[in-house]
Amino acid sequence: MQHKITPIIFLFTFTFFSINLLAGSGQLLGRVVDVNDAPISGASITLNGTTFIAISDSNGEFNLTVPFNSGSVLIRYLDCRNQIIPFQIIDGNSLNLGRIQMERVELAKNIIGVQLGLGANIYNELYLNERLVFRTQIEISPIYLRSVSGIKSYDDEGNLNSADFVTNMVLPQNFSMEFKGYFNIASRAGKYKRVKGNSANYFLLGVKYAPLYVGLNQDYLLSSYSSNDIYTEYYSNTSSVIYDFKGVLLAMSSLGMRRSFGNHFNFELNAGIGVNLNSFYSDPSMAKGNPENWQAIRFTSLQGVAFHASLCLGYDFVLVNR
Image (cartoon, rainbow, N blue to C red; front, side, top):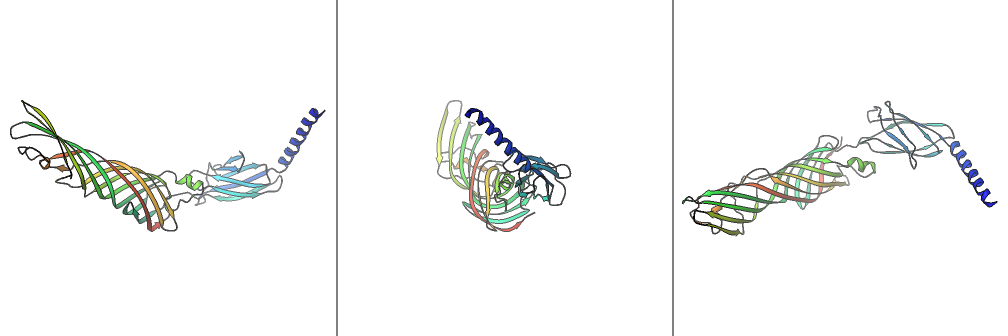
C-alpha cells in the first residue's frame, strides 16, 4: 500500500508546482540600444539562474517568457558592459523594461604619465581602436643584450684569420614606439572589474632604440689558418670595447598587465624578448693577446638576443576617456 501511495504523492506534488509555475509566468519586453540610441541586434537576454534566453532582433527588441513573478535578467553584447536588470511582474501579464542602453567598453583616448620602479619612464598612450593603443616612451630600464658575431681577414703574410665574438652588454636607456593590444578588457568589464585607465592585460610589439651601452664582457675565440699549421686560442676580456657605436635598434615583444587605482595611479608589469635589427662595430685589435701583425679589422654584429623586464608604479597626468 505504501508503494502505491508514494507515486501518487509525487504526481500530486509535481502537478501542484507546475500549476504554480505556469501561474507565475509572464512576458518581459524591451529594446536594446547603444549610447547613440541605435538598435543593437544579437544581444542576449538571459533569466538569471535558468536557461531561458532571448535574442534581440534587428530593431533591438526582445520578448522573453519568464516562469517567475520576480527575478533579474542579464543583458550581454560583445564588447559592451553587461547589465543586470531586476523585474517584478503580475501573474500572466507582461512587463516592458523599456529602452536598455548598452555601454561599449573602450580604451582611454589618451594617457600621459610617468612610472617609477624597476626602471623609470615617461609615456604617452594614444587610442587606435577598441583594443589597440600606440605608446611612445623614454625609458631608463636595463635591457640585457647578448650578441654573437664573426669576422674573417688576412694578415700581412696572407694568412686567413677568423674570430668569433660573444658580447654581453646592458642597454640602460631607450626610446621606444610600441603597439599595445589589450586582449581581456571586455571580459574584465563583463565581470564588473575595473577597466578605467586601460586596466587589462596586453601583448606588446614594438621597437626600441638604445643610444648607450654598458659592457659586461667580450669573449674571443681566435683561429689562424696557414699552409703549415692550424691553431686556435681563447681569450676573455673583462670589459667590452665597441667602436663606432651608433646605438642598438631592437625589435621587442612582451606580455604585460596594467591596473589603475584611485583617480590617477597605476601599476604595470611586463617582460619580453627581442632581437637587434642594426649593426654595430668593434675592433678586435683590442683583444688581449691578439697577434700584432693583424690588420685593423672591424666586425659587424649580426645576431643578438635581448631580454627586458619592468615593474613600475605610475601617475597619469592626463587621462582622457572616449
